[in-house]
Length: 565
Image (cartoon, rainbow, N blue to C red; front, side, top):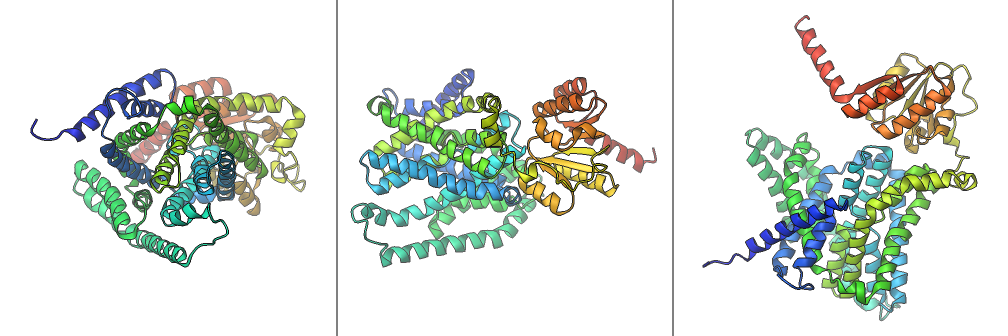
């Protein structure tokens, strides 16, 4: 052919092999990300056979990073984060500190200089949001309290890593020499560079939050009014890539930060859900190229040459930072199930670790060996993550089978775990127990209170329970799937149990407890699945409301009422 087809060859081979390896991974019950990474290993220079163009792959990977972070920004809700801020913000920051210290300590013991050790530790401290979201979606707990805490935790980690990516280049010179002269402090030039960097970032963020929040939603509405799906998708992608590129060129911030804020301000539009949905295929496609390009960098020989270091790296990822998160969640007096879920969520590393490792090597802060160890840790931890999630239930049963250990971990002296002694016995007789005070439960609770009905709320969110009590609403904190929580809500004397959380497995446990302690109790439960609805009807003997069915009935009644029917 008279013209070069290197780009087409790279894309074609990457997609084709990623598809094949992804299918194999899926058949083996592994995350498809593992297949994409393996495809990259096969195409890389460290394995025999065809070698893809590394430079082109790196540029395609940058587009993948931009679209990935744009997607994170589209799903980032300040309100959702604020709802779990008391645990997600301090918990994530402390966990990052612990994991960084563990990684740095191990790296120093290997003889690395301090700058390499710090960057290595930071790279091991953050988990993959992409892996987490898929894991929670597969288990149907993404919208649960545990899911919200885990996602909020990782959003804080993502924001922290974005700041690390922004600050690392100006700090590189000082970090690169500080190991040799630890007594030296930051030079005036470094301080000026840092101030300029923060100033540029502040100006960029201000422009995005003040101007972008008005311009981008208006742009989406204007393009949507053309009724052209192609133009709408084009506008979304143009904003994502254009802002990412412009932010890097004009303000010196990373592509990742620019794309994240582009997605976050785009979320302000009522069309943000459509933007997320219609840009998803392109984001997924380029994210595949990102993971393939990461795999190209991995040297499998590290598994043979440095097996003990790979094991140590995995120990920090799967055990070290997960154990730190587990203890932190329990220290905040959240249930054992929440602590185990957050720990499992953090037992892997992903995209930010890859980006940070590549940046560290390019700046001369990390040895190539460190990047190989990080990639090996990512490979294995992502592969093992589904197994870690499967261990949650057995681990919970094992802990609770040892009453002394369970009492220590569950913190039974928690004042929010039981109703105050001042609550009258008459109030908790023939009352309603409402499980979950989220978007659905809140409307139910407000309506019951307005009608003067006695109500006790059970919710896993401590901040929610504290807020309810401040407003005079009786509530207990904990996972209502555990009998102790429903007992504290006086389920034995309740007239009705209303389950407003969309978790069929936990709902079945609640129903079992309620029927055991109060056989004639009336039960109302919600679900979004026909099969689950049929199963819950058989087991509960109560009323099961299917979300889509109830919405259709409400709309039908409204239409018929307008026509006088």
